[in-house]
Image (cartoon, rainbow, N blue to C red; front, side):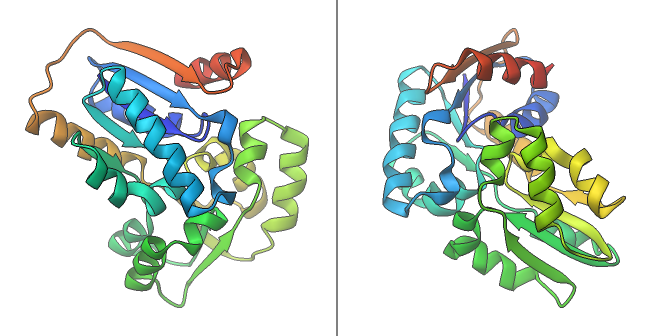
Length: 239
């Protein structure tokens, strides 16, 4: 079984890419809506939360763990890998993708405050950034997406997306791919970059490395708030 977790349903954007490459496996998705949003948590808080989640997923039988949250990945992945023996695969903002593809025009990196302030993110940014790249924190955006507050989300984006001539957008939070349409309505026909496909490829490699056998597809869902509405929305997005 492959375990995937995020601060809510945003990580479904990662899960869908994994399923495309590995359709015949058993997945367990953990939506930690009780502790949402992660982006505003301290490092100590987030480490405690993620340790407990990883342990729960292992206890449920997961042989591979995917951190489908940029903030948790940036802050916690190294310590979690030192703590647990199972392979732990972490997402990171797709800044390198922009560098590798060298698209023309200005690039906006959207992320949470926790991600942007992390040492891992700053190292990545300084390695691949250029004069055409701008980073900005979007506090509270993931929570608006999580709660599906469409009108509040529209007002928020109109206020925050105050840029001209943006051609590329790095979606540095796994919730953000769920609002590509809304972002395009303000910024125009931009190119999107996110880390989901890279994570999926890495999961496929690890599955081969540990010889995790294929089974019939199965998908289980746990929400830390026991929210039935979150569960319904999750399966609606997966489909």
